[in-house]
Length: 380
Image (spheres, one colour):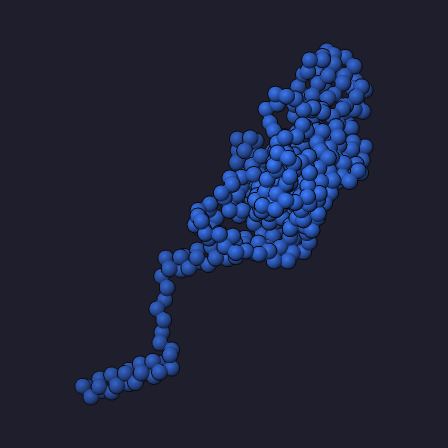
């Protein structure tokens, strides 16, 4: 019996040595906790790569893009359209925690295209805190209206680009059913109130009285305004045009201008390799661009001399493209009219689709707050 046990032991030792030599030692099986941790780490790495290279996800927090995008819409933003930016800072993924004072050299990879007029673009808000790195600034979404080198002017709410009308009531422009603004509705009978049910069918939720009993103010799309104007008891529907006032509670870009949101410009948008003649008159428009975005020191002396990096200059050539953006909710949008141009290095990507939508002011039931019809909807 002892001899038999000795043979078994020798066989077992030989098998172990053979397994060691061939590198086939049996691995320990992972426990459930280790498997979960591995899965979580893999998912985080996968999402970081996907959101850095291909796309990102954002929520619409304000009504500035209504009715194209609603508060509570969750959108997919493609970084491939305009090209991915490499990281500018190091931080913890999906948070605003980053290493301050450490700015990485960065570049933008080639994309499918450059931003186009009417694209809905997501960008880092240029007017955010001065000391913030670009990629840590607040995310905004607006629509591109003015392209690099365009001359843009707004006359009585109508946008003109290079002398041509861009938006006007009679045109079949692509956002006629979604871009909204304030309108005056003129009624035949001052005692009559516009029927709420008919207004709601057109997406108009409120009407406000004015000092004139025959006139009410509404917020509506161009298409809704045209439909209301056709009602038998309505004599006219005209856009509300605001003029500059000495005591207005807001300032527009550039700060020294006497523009209003509805009568703005003309203003020439900087573009890469565009040469502009610098004058004391246009200096307020370009000083901010040259110093903040182009990285130079610049000043205007009392005798009208403009100096860039200490050298007297009468012209300047821009090094990147800039865009003039506006919200689709024209009378409730803080955009380029207020804080100026969006530099290309601030552009994140193009908004391409709504993947989920949540109406927090809707039904008290959770399912009733989901806007099912808006889910998986392409963004114009």
